[in-house]
Picture (cartoon, one colour):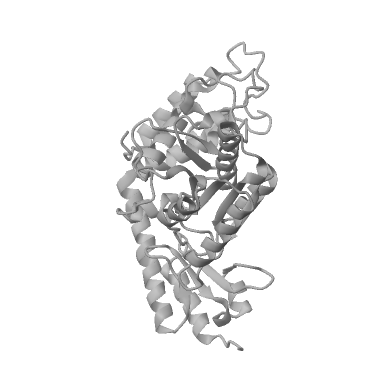
Length: 411
C-alpha cells in the first residue's frame, strides 16, 4: 500500500468512519463485553473538542485491540479501528522495511520492551516445538549496547542472555571476543540462538552488522533466528538512508521491533512488533477461547487508541514529509558534531544518526544536569548523550555549547 499524506478532513472522515463501524455500547444491546467506553462521568465524549478530535474520540470510545489482526479473525466489535491498525502494520513493514505485500504479521504493542519480549517468546517456543530443545540449549545473544529488555526477556523466559563486547571507538561487535564466547557456548551444550541485532542502540545510535551475526552463528553450527531491535531507529534509519540494508529483504532477518513513542512522538505505549507470516502461531494462546481468533500477544487486551495515534501521524505526514523531518534532524546533528569537533570534544556518532554520545570525562556533572544529558550509568557515567529531536533546536544547542566553553573540567 502507499504511504500518502492526507488532508485534515480526510483524516477525520477515516477515523470517525472506523469508530462508527465499531460497536456502540450506548446504542446497541451489547451485554457480554466487559470493556466499554471510558467512564462518561469523568471522560465525556459530549465535550465539543473531544467530538472534533479523532484521537481523543478513539480514546474515549476505548476500542479493545486484543489479538493480532493481520492473522484474519479478530473481534468483530472493533473491526473499524482494527482496519486502521492493519494499515499501520503494512506501512511499517512494506513502506519502511521493504517487505513484500501481505507478507508480515504484527501488532501495536505496549512498547519496544513488549515487542522484544514477543520476539524472544516466539523463538524460544519455536526451538522447543520444532527441535524439542531444552531451555539450557537456548540462548539470547546480543551486544553489550543492547537494551536491557533482552536481559529482562531472558529472566522471564528462563533462558540465558549473553552480551557480546563491542569496540569502544566504533561500537561494533568485537569479532575475536565474540568467536571465543560462542565457541564456549557450543562447548557447554548450547544449540539454538535467538540473535537480537540493533538498528540504533539506545545510548549510541549504533547499528549492528547483521551479516556478521549470521556468519558467527553459522560458523559454530548454531540453529538461529535474527530479530532486529529497531525501537529507536525503525522510524529514522531506513528513512534517512535509502541504502539501509536492514529490512525484510534481508533473508536472515525474521522480525523487527519499532517504537512509535520515540522518533514518531506518539503517546507512550505504542511499540510495534513485526514478524514474517506463519510465525505468530508459536505464541498462540488457545486458552483464550472466548476471544475471536484467540490471542498470541503478550499484552492481550490493549488500547486501540494507541494504534490510531500512529495511523494519525502517518496520515498527517506521508512518506515525503516524514523524510524531510528526519533530514532536518540529521543536518542539525551534523552541525552539532562539527561544533564539537572544533572544541576537541570526543564523541561517538553513527553515520547519519541523530544521537551524539560524548565522553563523560569532558563533561562536568553540573553541565550534564543543567541540560538533561543522559548518562550510560547514573552511578559511574562514562558517556553522556544528546538526542537531536524536534524540540532540540539550534538555539538550545548553542546555549549548551556556550556553557560547554565556560566549564572547567577537573581531570
